[in-house]
Amino acid sequence: MDFRYTEEQEAFRSEVRHFIHEALPSHWLGVDPGPEEEEREEVHRLAVEIWRKLGGKGWIGLSWPKEYGGQDDPVKDWILKEELIYWGAPGMDIGVVQGDLILAFGTEEQKRRFIPPIARGEVKYAIGMSEPGVGSDMFALQLRAVEEEACYVLNGQKIWNSGIHRADWCVVYARTDPNAPKKHLGISVFIIDPKSPGITLRRITQMTGLAAFCEVFYDNVRVPKENLLGEKNKGKDVSMHAFAIERSYGLVILHNARRYFEQLVQYCKETYVNGQPLANDPVIRSSLAELAIEIEVGRNMGDRLNWMGGQNMLTVLPSCQTKVHGACVAQRVASVGMQILGLYGQLDEKSKWVQLGGRLRHMYLSSRGWSLAGGTSEISRNIIAGKYGLGLPS
Image (cartoon, rainbow, N blue to C red; front, side):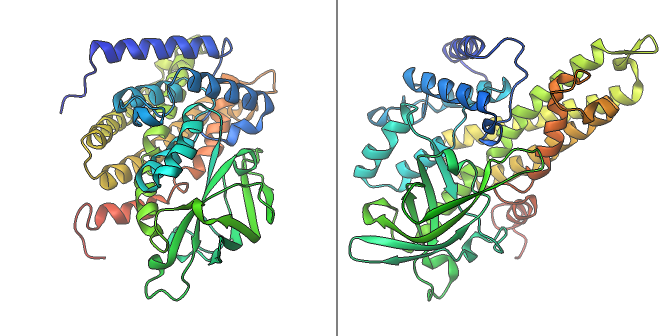
């Protein structure tokens, strides 16, 4: 495996960096990928602007076929995502993930209807998987979808639905056969308008103080049959494909953590205590060196994951490995950062004494959930131990 990029690909990276630096405000410290920080109105406005500019340049869904607005170039897609995440540009949208699902399981009519607006940066997507009391066992979901003549009628509840209050569409997993012999056999997937009659949203405030999550109630929500994604009762196939993509979120976390880490290193070089830079403290040096090793290991894991995906190889195992490693490294970066900053680390961005814009405080709080989101680390470890990895009996 050769992970080096060609001159053309490196030239594209330079073009992406120029675009990002032009689009972001000066002295920008970055935001985490995903919808959480878009709850700050100024971040949301910037996210929408950047996403539309990316669509205008044809940079959304770069790995998709050209006939749907892509460029058939997965390597450029990896480069773009890495740079956007590392520089903390807002606007990274899970609509790209849902576009991958529609390409894999959608009808030709669905592909031509749903994918080009994503590629143009015109729409936002959300995912409706989790339910109260279900935990990581997605196949135990109870949101009910009953088939009628021209539609499906949905009743039930979802929770932890990220960004759905700002979304144009949501990919929702529901139970269409409650009597199936195995619970994963009776699930179907739908593309739903969150503003449909019968849908009620209730915001959930996270411990960061932002409210990007929603509790979603479905009361006789009618979904046209043409919005069924994949075959009825075969939602397991869609969900397993989605899991493989979502667990590669570990690579997203690692790129994000690398930015925090490098800001922390610079802080230690520039901050003096008793006439000496923090970077001279042997305990701090050792902690930062350990983090540097773990981040570099993660980058190599991510390169391997991307390479395998580009070869159309099964990526369930490396996705889970990267997810577990990414969450652990991010949490350690946050913990070490808070230890180095001391009481300054507890200050938010509004304090005149705040260091690093309060980013480490935010990361410390938000990273607690990164080992839970997209499937817990315990579930990923079970997959690594099972048939996709060590072959241990279940």
